[in-house]
Length: 170
Image (tube, rainbow, N blue to C red):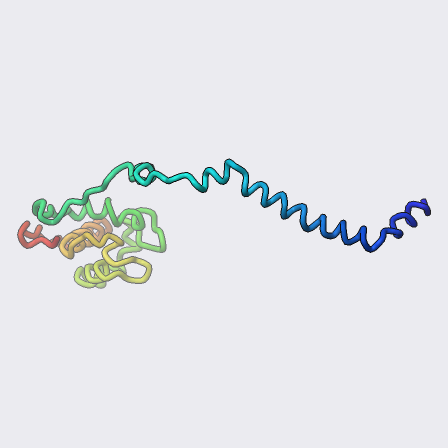
């Protein structure tokens, strides 16, 4: 075993230089050979067909939104607004919102009055976003929703009448 240790220590300086250069040059040569192979060179030289690329990345469908000129907006009832927008939080109590029909949770809010509740519903209050997170709702629709929710908890608010189609907001 002592002979093996002596043999590895007797490597000359020239041999060490050859091992070092081989360790550096060999990987560079391998990388160069791989990157310049005929297949890679052909891919680089290939002309890209632009129409094929555009066709491959084209969307599958187009979405067309209706414009305001498509007709008058039909105003939603308070119940429709509550079911579509408000029930996500007020149906489950999410973010400490008062649950629909819970008279004890709504009593302090009902005491503030219909106008205050409507103003808060339109502008947003605490964790509730403005218009319940649905910017498409009109002030009149929000007022109807407030009356509907408060009345479910024992209030006696009168919901506003539907606005005429020509007066409705778009």
